[in-house]
Every structure is written in C-alpha cells, then in structure tokens.
Image (cartoon, rainbow, N blue to C red; front, side, top):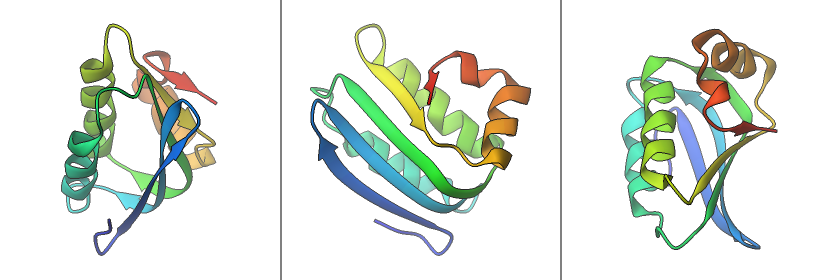
Amino acid sequence: MASALLDIDVCPNGDAMLLVLRGEIDLVSVESLRACLEEIDPKWHTLAVDMAGVSFIDSAGISALVEVHQRLQPDGVLEVWRPSERVRTVLEITGVGELFKVI
C-alpha cells in the first residue's frame, strides 16, 4: 500500500504484525496509513511499526499512532521500531513515546 509520500509494507513477523513505513507521515499521507491500520486483524497481539525510513511525522501521524494504540488496548501492544532521529524527537517532545514501546 502506498501514497505519493508514504510507502507501507505489511508482513507477519512471528507473533507480531509488522508495518514497514518509508517516507513522510502528514495530513496528506496519513489516510493511507489509517486505512492500512484499520485492516489489521485484531488477532495480532503485537503491532510493530518500523519507522527507520520515516523522515517526517506531524500531528496527524502522531494521532494515527495513538488511535491504533488505543484500539489495541487492553491486551495488544504497539511497538515503534527504529524511529529516525527526527521521528524519535517528535515522539519524545509530544510525550506519546511513553504510551507505547519505542525500540
């Protein structure tokens, strides 16, 4: 799945569902991310989002991560893997990095 600014690869990874994101997550591209997240089968206990290839995230992207975190509760886990330095800074400044596991 892809938008002009964001590529999304979805693949099972052991007990987790893995999303590999590349590009920018903003008001324009976030709808394709939300659509992808809504299609994830709730049977997956862990949703891992590899953000090493994400160069930019704004409040729309943060909101999408918080929404999926809330949807996975109480038994599921959202993990954000390898966020770029820029993305990690946004997660820290906004405080949402404390909601889910950042690896």
